[in-house]
Length: 317
Image (cartoon, rainbow, N blue to C red):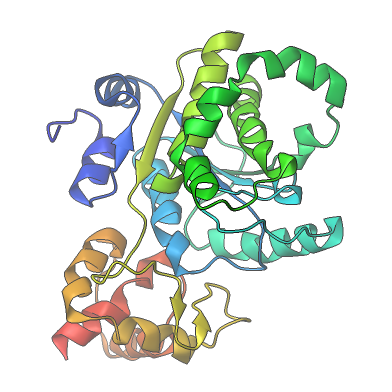
């Protein structure tokens, strides 16, 4: 469906961000008639996100730029469990202090992409520990456990693949998808969130949230997932031979960040430009502007306005 009415969905389609939606027409209608609040969750498994998260970050950026409200949800609660989706083994459990330290580090990234504040369209940064940690376990099981089918949960690809390989899936990890579904419902109740976005590996978890919302009386909720950021060879983006390509400057030098993009395979350049390039970037033709431009390019600025310049430089020589 290429003839979207809403500016946001047109932007997502043109940039190749749409992998799957729960209701193309319904979501497009909602986005074209209302200011929609949407979110993406980020679990704090490290003190920085890496370049593999840029697609999700840019989705939030474009959501805000097209007149809607973006929510970056930190998984202070779900991070204590760990997302098992398409993982070969359980994540290592982190202490509360480590989780908070990681969240503090991740927050630095978003200031480059989103405008935060108290206005109706200003972005929000929330932490699901706010409502997950105070939960009474027995009350939660009674009120929400009845709405989840174990048979259906076992059929999700993210779970099925792990079990088919005869790899253990703990009860702790199995609860993750329930908590993520509850996040969606709770965000709707507290902040009017109607849309959850994420990578294609999150489809099952997001649909669980829509189904829970339907069973508990929320307005219609929606899902939009994007293809995972991969290279032409099919490898997931985010790591190089020398390790992860972090977005925080204190974990990866500006030169190494710039060099990573400069060395991107020619087959990937146009696709990454389409996904990550920001049209608001303009070359300042003044002497000072050109000097500043070269400085920004040479240091691999992490701000969204310069995220794709290293790619552009490679093509232009």
